[in-house]
Amino acid sequence: MVQADLIVENAVQVVSCDPTRGTGGRVGLVERGAVAAGGERIVWIGPAARAGAEVRLQPNGQRVDAAGRVVLPGFVDSLDKEHAVDVFATLCAAQEVPDEFKGRPDAYLNLVVDKMLPEVAARGLARYIDVICEQGVFSLSQARHVLEAGARHTLRAKFHADEFSAMGGAELAAEVRALSADHLLKANMEGIYRMKAAGVTATLLPSVPFSLGLPYAPARRYLDAGVRVALASDFNPGSSMSFNLQLVMTLAVTQMKMTLEEALLGVTLHAAQAMGLESEVGSLRPGKLCDLILCDVTDWQQVAYNFGVNHVNQVIKRGRVAWGA
Image 1 (cartoon, rainbow, N blue to C red):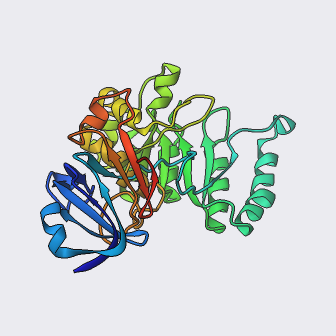
Image 2 (image 1 turned 60 degrees about the vertical axis):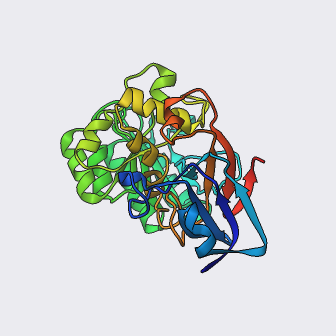
C-alpha cells in the first residue's frame, strides 16, 4: 500500500497520456479513475475502485473531489505564461537585428555569441537558445553559428525555422540535434525525414495563422512521416495574443487535421519532449510531478470539441491545489 498526502478521486476519466496505463491507445484512459500524490510527485494512478485497498491517505492529507470531471496532465506550453507554472527561459537575443546593427548582422551575432551568451550561461538565466532562421533575418550559416555556440554553453536549441521559405531550417535542426524546430510551414520532405531520424520535435503554432490570416502548418506531413508534433501558443503581442492551449487544440484538429489524440499529446507529452522535460511532466505516472488539471467535461475529447469555453475548473501543481475550489 502506497502512502499519499493528496488523492484526486471521483473522476469520470483520468487521461494519463501514458499508453502503459489505461486503455484508449496513446491517451492512456482510466475510466472512473483516481490519482494520488506524495509530496510533489505521483505515487499511484488507477481505477478509483482500487484506491481504498492500494492507497493510504495520511491523517493530514487532502482529498480532492473531481466530482465527475476529467483529469488531464497539466498542459505544457513551450514559451511563457503567468500563473502557478514552472518557467524555463530561452535566450532569444537572435530574433532580429537591432537598429544600431542594421546592415551588420554578423557583428551583432558576434555580440550575442561572445558577450551575451556566456553571461546568460554563467548566471543560469536560460536553458534554451533560439534564433530566427528566415530570409531577411538570419541565414542558415548564421543560425548554425548561434546554435553551436549555445551548445558549447549547454543551452539546448529550440528555434524558428522554415516559416516563410524553405531555407533548410529543418535540416539544420536535425544537424544540431535541436529539441524542437518551430513554425515549419515550408520545410521540405528531406528536412522532415532528417528531423524524424534525429528525434527533433516539430512545434506547430496554429494560433499564429489564426491571428494573422495565414496558411496553417501541414501537420499531417510531419505526423505521417513519423515526426513527433508538439503544439504551443506562441503567446506574444505581435502575432498571437492568446495563451489558451484549449483553443490551440481546437485549431489543430479543425484546421491542421490532427486527431483529438494527437492534439492532446501535442499540449502534454509531446510539448514536454519539445523542452526535454518528459521525465518530469507531460503524462501521469508514478514518479513524475503531480501536475494535473480538472476539466468540467464528461469526456476528454470535449476539451477541443467544445471551443471558446475555459473547461479548466481546478489546477493541481506539484501535488498542491494551485487554483480553483
